[in-house]
Image (cartoon, rainbow, N blue to C red; front, top):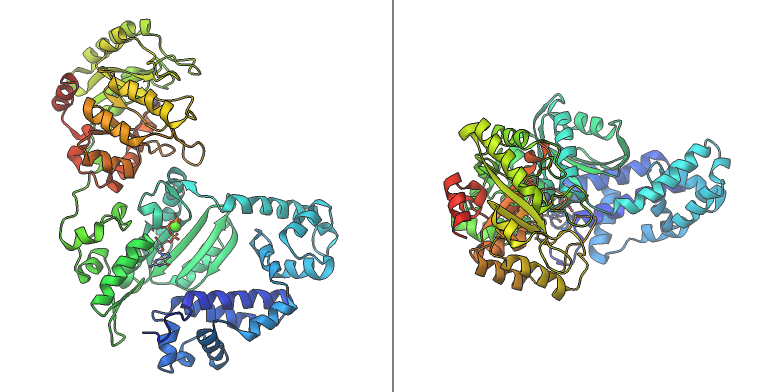
Amino acid sequence: MPQNPDAMTNVEIAEVFERIANLMEIKGELVFKVRAYQRAAESLRDLPEEAAALDARGELPNVPGIGKAITEKIQELLSTGKLEFLNRLEEEVPPSLLDLLRVSGVGPKKVALFWKELGLLTLADLETAAKAGKIATLPGMGAKTETNILAGIAGLAARGSRMSLGKAFTAGQRWLTWLREFPGVQRAEAAGSLRRFKETVGDLDLVVACADSPALMAAFTSHPGVVRVLGQGENKSSIELHDGLRIQLWSQPPESFGALWMYATGSKDHNVRLRELAQRRKLSLSERGLTDETGNLLRYPSEEEVYAALGLDWVPPELREDRGEVDAALNHRLPRLIETNDLRAELHSHSTWSDGLLSIEDMALAAFQRGHKVLAVTDHSSYLGITRGMKPEDLPRQRAEIEEVRKRLGDRILILHGAEVDIRADGVLDYPDEALAQLDIVIASLHASLRQPREQITARLLNAIRNPHVDIIAHPTGRLLLDRAGADLDWQAVFQAVQENGTALEINAAPQRLDTDDIHARHAVSLGIPITINTDAHSAADLDQAFYGVSVARRAGLEKDAVINTWEPERITAWLKSR
Ligand code: DGT
Ligand code: CA
Ligand code: ZN
């Protein structure tokens, strides 16, 4: 245990050394001097124990990558939190130059030129100089360099942002395929927020069990798609791609894969709880395993074994947010979460009768091929902006077509005739009650005027909920993730109304929606409100996105029975009739 609780952590010390290495490189110091600080930073990041503890036992100089000179600097940082050497260096090399390194394609050598030849000090200086054509006058640079720098500066703004779960998942699959084909990789999996299916993802965390990690890390950081290497070590590297996507790759030998996967999956808060449990058992938890008091490292090939060593049941990744799952795992009370292949019904879909791509028959066949026993065809009403919506007078003709398809498909799949009815800005539904009464299932949803004040937009939604024909409220807030904020709903009023009316709330599975979200879905189920997970499919491929919606339900802790789509057809039709 460190004597001084405020002492700097290994990561903080590593950051100081990385700062020194960058400043020295800009200054033009010899490569081997720069490299010494980079190596020290790497080994600090990989240390299983705090430097303070090693120092107390006099063992720091023996750590590979940390010699006598570096040990003295670590000691100065541990006791004072500062480093005289760094202060002097920052007087020689302005630290604002470090910001320039964040621009993709700009390394220390270029920064040194910008500084020494053009006197540039800040990012803003660099942008001005590039626009004025001054960069092209430097040796070895041209108009192309300027264009790249300006694109890189523009990319910086985007880099702070997060990506949709859909983009993260697709990119993650592609990179996992690449990793699994790499020689020596025995296993490659997603970790971090992607594995937890958080609704947006910052960077991708991927983990591998690999016998030859250095070769993999070298290939990873020199992959042709890489524009910047954000960090490179023996067991961990981080890259940025042309489109701003960042990937962190973690590697351990197969014996430690369980601990690695668990550590890199997080969340950070979940990990903190696990570390507390480990400490109570006089163990310390890292991505390599559990270390006991004698410094002996216990390795675990699977996550189950790490959890078991801490006295816990294995926790599904979607629950790892420190929302009570650790206590539940201790007491063997984790829920049996719903799974994608529990789904038997798609209750929200579109055909060529509105803006879908497929005929009713083709949609029904696509749903059948995916194991569904029920498909509700719920084309749009003709609200403002949807030119291809249906008028109430079209419904009987659509019903006739459904009857035809039912005859042709026989008992393969039950087709329900429904509609997705827009809730107009004044709260009135797009179809009159006589039209709604003809339908097997009615979905109501908000599409426009989402910026109305809370009271007004909530009243609009309540109006739909109170209509006895309405069975489901689709994507309640109307949000589009990373794009358009949803309605400012009074959720308490919404919950109360759906509870009174027996209406179901939809988790819309489209990854740009994921609406109802996990928090509200959890609360809804605690109140006994039925949930339905739908893809809102406009094509056959859309039906395959159901797992995103299931992941929201899993994050909400839902078991199968809470979700209407898992019910047998008879139970679904009975529920519809009972309303
Ligand atoms: P993101 O990328 O913002 O969507 O969210 P995450 O959860 O993927 O977080 P990220 O990428 O910062 O870190 C990946 C995992 O690494 C995280 O889920 C748990 C682990 N981790 C990161 N920082 C810490 C930390 O300070 N302490 C512990 N115990 N674990 C951490
Ligand atoms: Ca991440
Ligand atoms: Zn829809």
